Image (tube, rainbow, N blue to C red; front, side, top):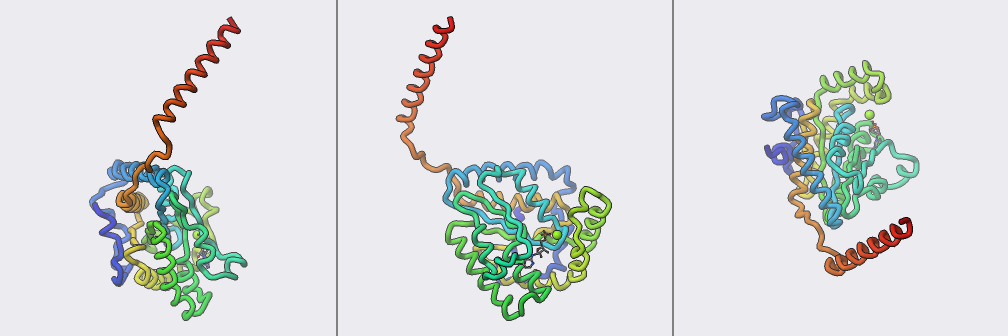
Length: 289
Ligand code: AMP
Ligand code: MG
């Protein structure tokens, strides 16, 4: 299935999250039956990341946004099962510190953009500055409403510097969120995940939906597309996201870089080193004997 084409938000299109089924699982009947497909995508990602890192010419930025308990942490864990931690980073964006909020909203973000050969995953991102900030009226409308253009320009800057930008909204239903809150409540090993604000934020669900819809409409561009991923089923969410990432990386034209050394020369050095080592071993064997 081409989930890139299915879940991408075409530039200029209206987004109505209520019209998108968060329980969608395509033709896949169950997690068990989908496992080989998921594994295949992870293997593709692993191979492609090796090339990305070796080539050290392009980079990839993955942005994860969602309401509480939609699974951003789960996606991070899943993606890392198909990547070498070397050359990758995860950045969680929390409430800005004093020094961060003394600067423009992109100041803290830009420094975490992936360098050549790297993949960065943003667990929340600069989008919080048009989401939570809007819903809680932390700055006036005239300030946050100008940020869409600034975000588009910022992402264009990254793209022109050879970074692919993929943005995922993990779409869950209020029922599913409540079911996950219950799991957290019933499982002491997950109590650390609970915060009081989970419930106050939940009451603001319609305001968040409106903020997400507008943010996605205003900033899904050809160079930095948004994908709305049905996420009530964790396994399907993982399958779709890893497929979209692997398909995108396949298009990046990643190849092993040309050899930087003279291989014939190095081969001679290698054989000389082998001869020297053999000689040394024979000498010390004679000494012992
Ligand atoms: P969590 O992702 O559960 O660790 O929570 C991080 C919290 O930081 C969330 O409540 C976010 O809404 C909040 N947050 C992240 N970025 C911003 C921002 N720019 N302004 C205000 N709150 C933010
Ligand atoms: Mg949270």
